[in-house]
Image 1 (cartoon, rainbow, N blue to C red):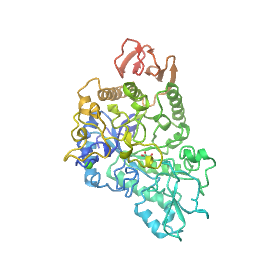
Image 2: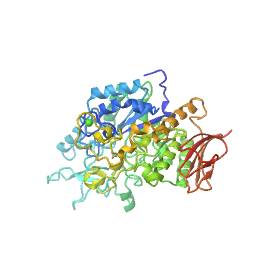
Image 3: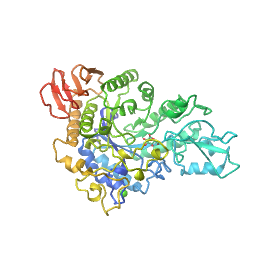
Image 4: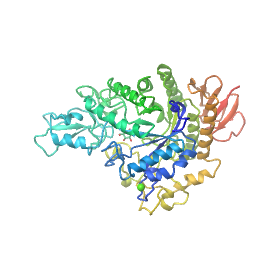
Length: 530
Ligand code: GLC
Ligand code: CA
C-alpha cells in the first residue's frame, strides 16, 4: 500500500470493471482467467484508472457466469488458484490499482454446501431456515405468485420426486440460485466472515450484488398486482427495498472501517434515485450505482431529468454520486445510442461527459474501445436469463479484441489455440482491437486516456471539486449542459443539428470541433468559463 492511498480515494475515482471470463485467457481454453488478467494489468494501469472491480471468479457451477457462488472464499479452477489471486492483488497494488470484488449476498448456488445440507435435512429443519423454504398450496401451487427476474416462477420444488417433502424454495433469479434467508441471524454472521476473509487479504472494496433485495416482506405475501409480479425486483415492494436491509449495510460499513485504509462498499441498488440514495447514508454504503441513469438511451431530457434527481439525492444524503453507462448486464452504449457510426460517436461523447462529472465513474471493459453489442446466434447463447425467457446479455460479454489479427480470437487466448472462445467473436472484431487503437491518436482508447489524465489533473488542482454541485439543463437544439459550480460546464450535443457552445475555453472534446464555438451532433466537450 503506498502512502498516497487515502481513505476517500473513491470519491473521484475511475473504476474499470473487469469481466474475467472475457478479459484475457492465459491458458488457452477459451475462457478468460486470472493469469490472463494479471499479464494485462499494465494495460489497465495505462488507462490511468484508480481501481478494478472484478465480477465473480469464486467456485461456481457457472449457471449464471459465476453469480451462482458455491464457495465464497475460493477461486474457481476455471479461473485459476488462490495463489494466483494473491499474486494478482499484489501486482495490481504495485501498479497503483485498487481491487474491488463482487460479493453476492442475495443468493448462492444450489451447489453451495449449506444449501445441499438444507435439502438433505428436510422440511422444518434449522438447515432449511438458512434459505426460504415453504410448503406449496394444497393444489400443488408454489407458496406465492412471485416471478423470477430471469422469467418464470420464483419457486422450485425442493425434492420433486419426494411425496413427503412438500417444500419449495425461493429463487429471485434462476432455480440454481436459492435466496438466503436474511431474517436468520446466522446468514449475517456467515457473510461477515466472507467479508473479513477478503478484507484481511487486502482487497480494497466490494461491489454488492442485488444489494436492495436481501430482505423480503415478512411472511412472503402474494404480490398485489400482475404488474408488480412481472416487473419483479424493481417495482415489487415485497421483494426488495425492505427497511431491515439497511442494518446489514450499517454492519458492513462498521466492518469496512475497521480496516486501514477503509474498504469501499458500492451497491447494485436498482431503485429510483431517491430510494437508492438511502443506501448511501453516512453510516451505510459509500456508493451505489446510478441505476436510473445507466441504461438511458440517447435522450437529452431523460439525461437531464435523471441527472437532476441524482443531484437532489446527493444533496439530501451527501454521498458523492457515481456514473456509469455500461456493465455486463446491459446492451452496450454504442448500440443503445443508435448503433453504427452514429452510435459509436455518441457512446464516445457520453463517456467523455460522465468523466467530466463530480463523483466516481465506472467503465466496463471494452467501453474504452467503443465496442458495440454483438448479436450472438441463438444456438450459441449461454445466458440463463435468455433461457428462462428474459433478454440475452451475452452480446455485451464478448471476449476483448487485443490484436487486429484474428489469430487466437484476436489475441484473447494465449498458449494453445482453443477450439473457440466461450462466446463467439464476430467478423470485424479486430477493427476495435486494443493494439490498433493504441497506435491511433484519434481512437476511443486514446480519448479515454487523455480524458482520465485531464480529469486527474483538474481534480488535483481543485478545478474539479470532488463535491461540486451540478445543475442539468437542456438548451435549444438538444444541447445538454451539466454546469459544475459556476465556471465549468460539460456540454453534449444530443439533438440533430449543430449547437452553439457556451462561451469559454474548450479543454477537451470527444471529436475535434469543426467550427469554433459550435458543437456537432454526437460531440461533447468540457468547458472552463472565465
Ligand atoms: C446482478 C448481476 C447479474 C446477475 C444477477 C444475479 O444483477 O449483475 O449479472 O445475473 O445479479 O446474481
Ligand atoms: Ca482460460
